[in-house]
Length: 220
Image 1 (tube, rainbow, N blue to C red):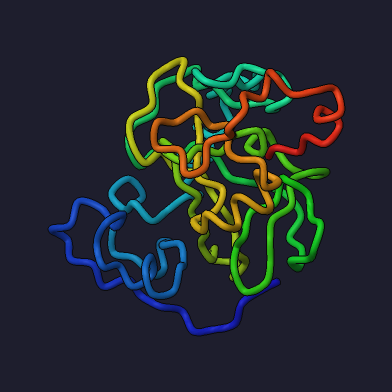
Image 2 (spheres, rainbow, N blue to C red):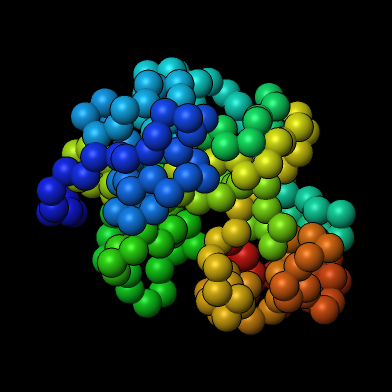
């Protein structure tokens, strides 16, 4: 769906290195992506741009591999696939765009949905890209960024929130509400991210589950 509203011009001062952590009107108040029409910064100086030619070229390259996800605590293939970095990422670098079908939020949606607000999600189950394999972590190294693009459509990107080394799992927090995580992503069984800061660790290691439990697994 296209959003309606007037174009907002970024008021950031030139002494800001970028807009990522500043009080950028586009970034914080309106969740709009900056572009050449509403921002005084150039493509390489603004941290609130996600679709510059340089970024699109970088995101098109192979930057991670999809493998069977294994954390230090849980190493069972029933956890699902994960994305492991094959190149280093710097803080605030864009990993890639989360692509899928934009749908109204409903009950019993797939595990590959990300919330973009106002009752809509991006569902990557059938028409998504490899970004859907990035696993959840309660102590992630990435964050999900939702912005209104210049075509007035909401889009989502995954951005590094800290430096990521080659060989590290790329992760982000699927939802900020622990109750939502527990109900919709952990199926009320607990989290298997293996982080020391895990909000709700699974009490029994997944590798000890019975065959009956295997059929019920739907960890996102």
